[in-house]
Image (cartoon, rainbow, N blue to C red; front, side):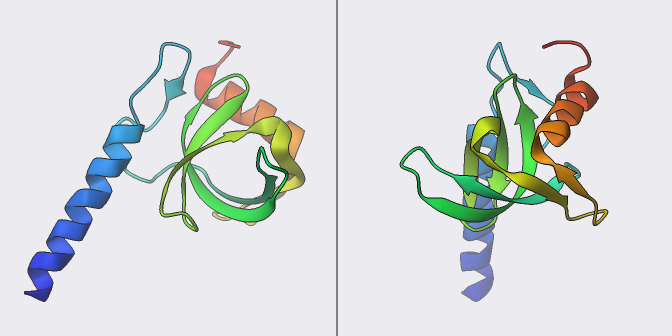
Length: 116
């Protein structure tokens, strides 16, 4: 019974990730199959209502003014605006710490080339 419940939970989780990973015409996704080999970062974020939080995410797609990522604390895909990020971004894979504006610029170039 437990194995069946775990299988259902995993299937629902994969379905949710696939549902939110559809590309828009203005968005470029590096990880079409959501294999979680993407950028793994932590940063402070202030939402549209002014509420601050710390986020650990895996970036799924990038556009000019925002990026989509799987958020560990929300257990769901979220969209983050670059201009609402705190001043520092920690790369959890390498341990490097970046100024958020430089990190965003590097991310866009690395994933999209000169698209933006």
